[in-house]
Length: 361
Image 1 (tube, one colour):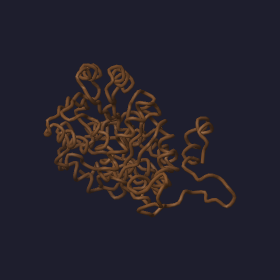
Image 2 (cartoon, helix red, strand yellow; image 1 turned 135 degrees about the vertical axis):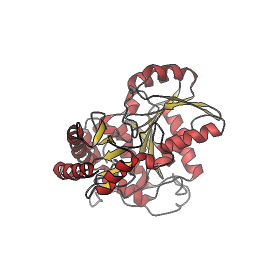
Image 3 (cartoon, helix red, strand yellow; image 1 turned 45 degrees about the vertical axis):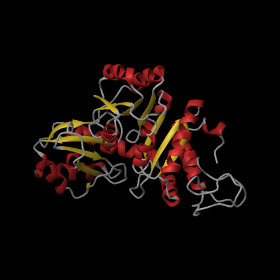
Image 4 (cartoon, helix red, strand yellow; image 1 turned 90 degrees about the vertical axis):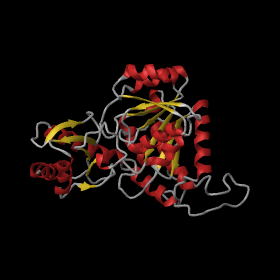
């Protein structure tokens, strides 16, 4: 277990390995165990497993420290998103990018159907965000956006949100805390699909929320905790154990995948099979508009032999998908857009497979 005063001095790569460990003592385990129980003996800190679990605590300690706050693990990324959006008052106004992860988009539509308001602003329109905030109850941001890879001026927009006292949420799934720490930029809540880069092996479905270590942050954290408990969106301890194990290698995985993504983005520029490359300049994910229609993009996916045609991202394996195959995907997304989640394979193998698939169309 890393002492708080020591954790602040550690480089992030070291913190990832050292955090969320048991107290050191002779004969102690190096890892926190998987606590399989539904209930606890009376008069303890927790009396029922829907409210807490020691395996959760270890993961939450590690992720909270990584983001600079206090974390809660949820049953899925959508569970975390739902909890964060529960902070909007009934009938309230949400300001959000005009293109978001489609699960978030579906919940925003549901908010409108229930009588709420959603003001959608292009992710790069800073002035538009600042204007829309004047009437907002909650600000929702992604940077980069999924799947268009647009980047928002988080520091500017979050600063204004904080001045106005508006609750702000940033989905940090694509950037990870290695590229961006939204709490330090003024965000109130950070959301993660732990399924993706944090766990990194495509073997768990989990989510997380993180709040700041302030009176305001702790208050929001209690509301999120209450939502998790009452709605039952709790994580299985085995899945959380696997996520913590995956988190240990986040830095090395993300470094390799990001280097691969940068190289592929460069090579794809000017490729005859690509009309546009969408790459934010960092990170392990990019999107491309295939030269052609939706069928051409689908044929690219079908022609790959190494790249996995699948709907997720953030695993060690490289994945691609035409996002508009999903009916709920935003119509702002081109029908020929492919989202590429770049893995840790050798970049030459990835390029050879992608190149032949694009040329085959």
